[in-house]
Length: 343
Length: 93
Picture 1 (cartoon, one colour):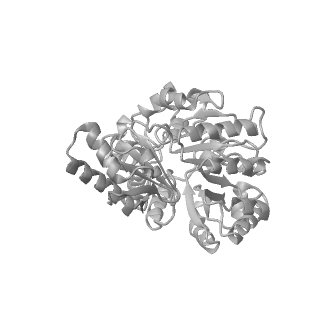
Picture 2 (spheres, chains in turn red, orange):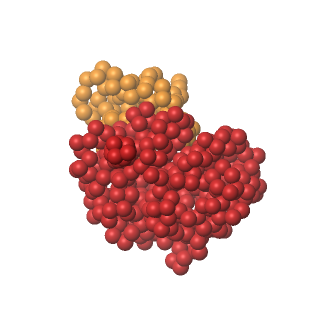
Picture 3 (tube, rainbow over the protein chains, first blue to last red):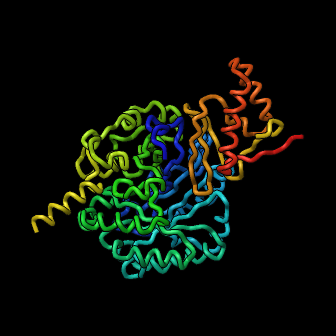
């Protein structure tokens, strides 16, 4: 994707990540938002519709909807219907366990993309991360979607536990007629606590980078541009899209640069009471994010491929913005070489 | 490009104005397409209410540019968008 048009930010987001609730029936150890119970102050149905109205007025094309578990909200499918009436595409990220035939029937809309999370190809490996019984229930949901020919992706968060299962997960996805997607583990939410134990080592990240090159049909969203080889350059964005192409709305209506930076210092405004266009174009938080430069990366050979990587991971691991992504390919390869020399 | 035709967005495609020109979003993918057309073509043109001829003539009148130059540029843009499957031609004759 051409950065020249995106660098200073578009007139509005292309995609808004919307976490519609903190409520979740699972308790995944890597949950980016520390979800579980619904929280006081979550947007009501009417307030959610006003959020959708605001995005529609600003010509936002797409919601990436998550949570928490979106289907744990009784009004969720109605809200998606409302977004579709406005022509907004919804990419729904779900654990799949609450999807039944009736919900699948209502999701058969051309503007819906579904992404079901699995973190292992067997009940044992998946449930170690996502909780007992979650694999079987997610597969039941996937079968409901398959029966109705609803396009779906299986999404796996890359961790030390899921890495050895990627081939099996890709095979499972294929057997269900689903696409396969891998996303990056970030140390936000409960991921802060499990980061050290679950994040892949630098060697493993290098191996994963090679695996990605051998599996060009596997999508990664905007997760892995900092480790992807040249052959994946055309497959997606090669820079952080926060405040340029995208932003995040929390279950409380708070607006942040991205889902992984829901920290007080990055709070840019609140919906539905604030004017979204003013936040997007005039928020000091968003402005400073657009000005963010990872200067120490600019002389790197891979700078044009990653532009410094994921600011959220740099922030959470080093408590500062403007630093290189510690999990970028150059960092990983240089450590691997050093380790090899010492050995 | 057919001057007597209108051009509409393909199914599942949306467009909006940006400072560089037009930004197309195609839900099949989804994918984005950036068109550096500046202010030459309004996003509302793809509502199909004006023909390509009317578009060319309005640009010529507004900017006092040579007709051939404007025709060539608009033709390039519309042909490219049609090739990408983002718009389709609809004859009004």
